[in-house]
Amino acid sequence: MEYKDAKILYLITGLNLGGGEHLLLDIIPRLDMPKSHIKIVCMMDPGVVYTKLLELSFDVINLDIRKKPIVFNLVKGSFIFYKIIRQFKPDIIHTHLIHADLFGRIIGKLAGVKIIITTVHVKLLERKYLLFLDRITSFLVTQYIAVSKIVEEYTIKELKLNSDKVITIDNGVDINKFMDCMVDRDKKRNELGLSASDKVIGCVANLRTQKGQKSLILALPDIVKVHGSKIRLLLIGDGPCDGELRRVVAESGLQKNVLFLGHRADVPELLKIFDLFVLPSLFEGLPLILIEAAAAGCVIIASDIPENHYVLDALQTGYFFKLTDIKDLSFLITARLKTVGELRSQIPIRLFNQFDVNLMTEKLCKLYTAILSR
Image (cartoon, rainbow, N blue to C red; front, side):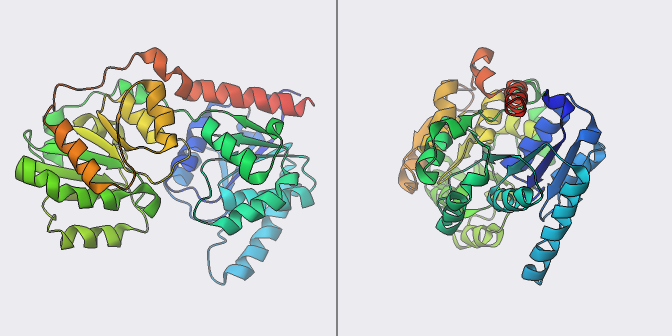
């Protein structure tokens, strides 16, 4: 059976902000199949991506499991999801993010779905109990997809899987969206209250411990000492660490230097006004934002974790600092800011092929067809 003749149900934990959520938003509209053959279900937290999928006329359902009492709503959501499956009769359930992975494979098998596919986006370093649950239910999964070779190796090792049960399909982005974006830098900066002479450091990431923004803020005082009051740090993103990060900024006396911009729909334009882009993550899956920043021509500084190297080494760009080493980070940013205007990234477009969203979608569709034909 060709994938376009099948029915596919996508299940994801939430549809607000994040790499996995935006991956779905990029892939699903590119599938060459009737919209009536696609159903998207989130367990909780509908948001920006949920709204955009609805605007594209896809069938999107929120199980709303997060509402209290959680146990009651989890049971209620299980029955609703079971009913959705029985009515829709999908040939494939494809899950994204760990809570949806566990929920989807168990309910899916109980409802009689033969093909369960799980995409692994990130290492489960913070919540070992979820890794244990993933391991003991892995027999229910037909195929794991890893978003990078690093995640593939991790998944095989930690879940104790045969290598043929995990395949890598590198995450991808719409390269042209970021490469071809035209923006008046001075005008855009003015909109944000920035001057043409400000030295702008940008970070686009959810405000979570994993993303390491606290290290970036703590590195700022030494940078300001060298470059003066013209230093501006733009933090783009929302998340549970918002309050803590604002407190660190206040305690460091950096209120005039740090701007919290929240979620933004104009990220391609913002990337064009940065003098430096910094991603200080503690761990990643495959950091899409590094691909986007590179396509936008940013000079990039990133933590020296394997996942960041995986992207930036392939694109032959970027500078690395020692993970959580605030002094090393401040030294590297200070040094790179001295050459602002001289280092705008010029990456041959061929190097982006590995991370192109169209290639990613093509590989995924071929995998669907291959599994359906077994």
